[in-house]
Image (cartoon, rainbow over all chains, first blue to last red; front, side, top):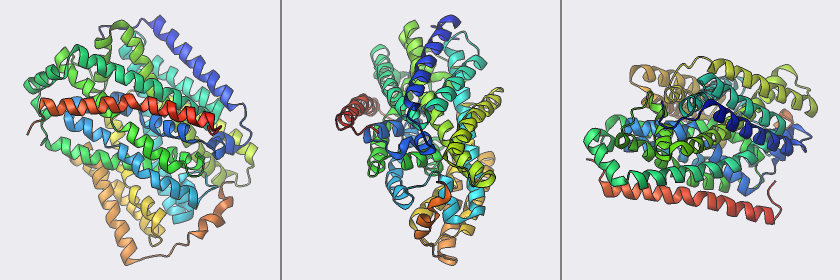
Length: 476
Length: 40
């Protein structure tokens, strides 16, 4: 499939070497974990450097290394810029992280917040959204692992997918959030250096002028600033990215884990550092036309161009970069989703009196269970990465306004928050099938906003913020 | 309305410089936190 493919022996050797390195690192970092706070929230004491790196690295994922090139290849210039606008999610979450930490200094999960603020019905709808999204993202990452290995080496899809999942589950299990954050730091450096080198080779070997000329001749729509579907994609992606970050326990758990005063500046810096990356990875995909590459599926365009430009050593290089990008998100999702299930499922519904030791054991078992479930769901390769992720857009965007009003406005009640999320999902999914994936998130967010506004102005409640302090024992 | 070559070049170079600075900034922050014993 590629000009420069790794043979299966070399690919396996890299996988095993990398796997051992990360797992040993995870074990080393996890030695000091004594309580559920240590394991799930890194002792609630993460400093600025690690906080910034984990915010950025977690957001660099298959989205940025595989899907951003795919979207640049399909939507051109707006695909690149639209994807980079997902940085707004991180930037806008910065003040929210400070608010979350101040309202709930002892909180554990986003579910804690929704249950305390809006009650059990909204919590049930929110958990559905959270778990559906988390599984969608995990499966898309597992599938990306399989696609990566099968495109860069002689290994098949199932071997790659299994290996990446196994490595991430192992080091997350051994080290908890501390291992996730420390590996994120190393992975973010590897990814950034790799992306810059690949783009540099692209400019040096093909040239911006040549790429512009070839795209203008062969697919001028990609440079069209008035490409309607692409402009719609831009706005849709802004809401999608914001919805992903605002609702997901991946980011809430970080807000709880960072030291006091760190969350706001870490998310802001992480967002600004992330902003240019999709433009760089997207630009690489535009070189496909100049290089005469016709990818078998659009989400493989990035690795194919990079491997062609860098030759056989480049295939190793690309493998390391994309593997790091996948691992930095997969570990975070495994950790945050297992926290959510432990706190909002196991403790809330099954064992309310569980102590720290019991929760720690449950959390570790849930990490293994999640890994296994993801592996089973990844076995059939059902959708392209972009399609799978965009399907979840209708879900996550519906939670944006209930969370914002929930954090800052005492008048929104649980009834209207539940209705906003439920009807937002219904309208987003309807338009996903009737119009296209690029309107799912924006329509869901719009309907959700209208219902929240109706609730605030027609049937206002009066939430007492002190309730969060009183609910302190919810998850401790 | 199509994106000109010069605008594409400005966009790509700005993004590339930004991406190249990011690891340097992260390493400087790490060095500062390490020195202040403020990593965790």
